[in-house]
Amino acid sequence: MLDAEVRELMQPFVLSDYQVQEVYSRFCLEVARGLKRSTHPQANVKCFPTYVQDLPTGDEMGKYLALDLGGTNFRVLLVSLKGHHDATVDSQIYAVPKDLMVGPGVDLFDHIAGCLAKFVEKHDMKTAYLPLGFTFSFPCVQLGLKEGILVRWTKGFDCAGVEGEDVGRMLHEAIQRRGDADIAVVAILNDTTGTLMSCAHRNADCRVGVIVGTGCNACYVEDVENVDLLRADFKKTKRSVIVNAEWGAFGEGGQLDFVRTEYDREVDEKSLNRSEQLFEKMTAGMYLGNLVRLVLLRALERKLIFKQSSRRPEFASVLQRNEEVFETRYISEIEDDSFPEFASTRKIVKNLFGLEKASVEDCQTLRYICECVAKRAATLVAIGVSGLVNRTSNRRVIVGMDGSVYRYHPEFDAYMRQTLQKLVKADKEWDIMLSEDGSGRGAALVAAVASKTK
Image (cartoon, rainbow, N blue to C red; front, side, top):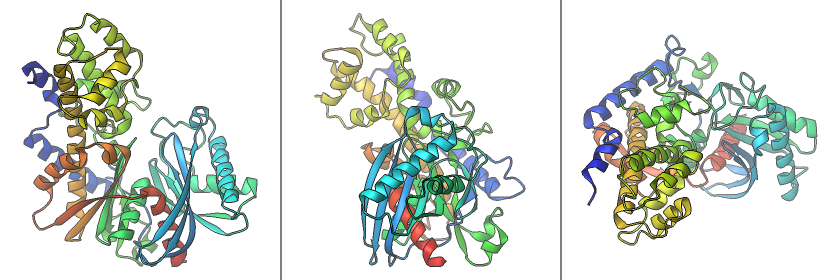
């Protein structure tokens, strides 16, 4: 049985129906503000048009490169599209060394171009012309399909000389400097757009793409007449366009203050990008483990966990020493654990604190803390998804999902569905679909669709 005091400790993470409805209303208002030219500068859900206006038909053919940069690793993919909704993917993961994440931007792009060249050589395609779709998962203003101006770095990156610059041009120049591969950057997109495209390749009703991984963001298909920022010449040719919501910044105008906890405030205050990306800091893998760590510290202080152990001060100092000590993946492993054995939970506790065998009660308390933090994240993501589903003009809407938190957490999908059932309009049919090889395959599909359009 859970201690009543533990429930009281976690109460700030449990969103009431009123709070859910209120966050939903505020989110919808921000989306509307982001789409309008007159209110866009003040909006914190920016709703940038992506200039991706054609969804895949499934008939695309040919070989395309995709580059997926959005965290401490990036992937290069060779995607062979075979028509009939069929594709094969060869990929390789390359690391971004820590010093390159905060060094000069030119060095970062030279490193990426070097890895691209190695990949192309390995696949014996040095002489082939290869269109490339570049998934760049940071806030960008798109001026066209292959022009993306970086607004600001997130996720621990802070490379000088890139903010305010066209990242497509910077990658193109780095490839040209080497001169050892015929690679053309034909499209820049966000990982959410890649997820949407990848799912639309398999299901034509996909209209929303969501990532809940290291970061958290979404995109959706909007009617062009509602997108003030879209260049006029693009409005004449197509009826709709994918909009990159950039919802991670939701709350920067105080909209989430009534549901943020003391732990959220501490995570924000100690982050690289203080006062920014507040919605992301409540939903994304980069922060969820840290939130659990802070709650655990409070639970230790109040003697709500490991009550029988005299080593509580020692456990607290382990948690205080390192903000990343409680990894977000532990949340998934703990919630996936079986009662009363708690084999994974006990292993995690042993690794963290050297405690030989945590009691069943301690394991239950730790699981409840993880559950409350994860369930709130899923609820918030579902609030945003509901707002986007309700905006689309389709009656039937598939939501394409990707990202490590969504993919590996055993209950995230179920938590989301509970909230979607409350908020999605009754006349909509909806479902959630896991993206296969999301943003990578999606980038190749954008490149394919762009090449076909040309």
